[in-house]
Image 1 (cartoon, rainbow, N blue to C red):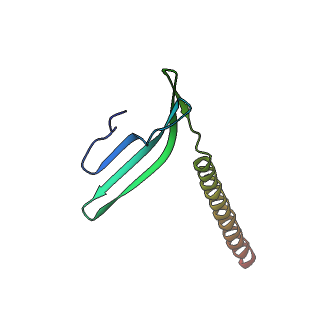
Image 2: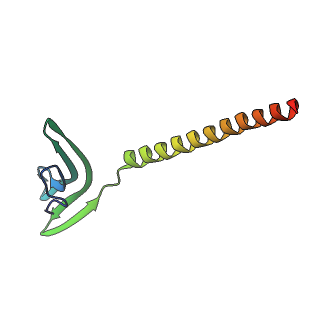
Image 3: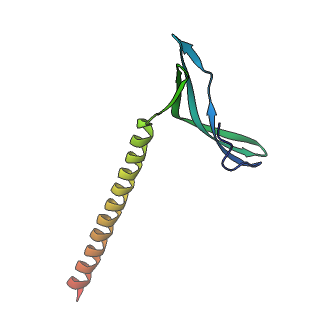
Length: 107
């Protein structure tokens, strides 16, 4: 197991192993990346799957897990930000265009 990246009193980031499961001579152990944030009034623990360790016939393989949900969430966030910026730019353009038009009509 990997040691915490930032060991400390307030924040730590570790790769943690879950309980191994053995069936038909194959042992599978889930691995998760865990971020722990501690405060004087409590804390937050956030874990996400990163891999499974598979042991068979004395051989150990690590199979990476692609977190599709996380990729979709990042895509939605980026898309939302792009829409907000586009709407803000269009709104500013409409307001500025309106002011220029009023200014030209009055002079």
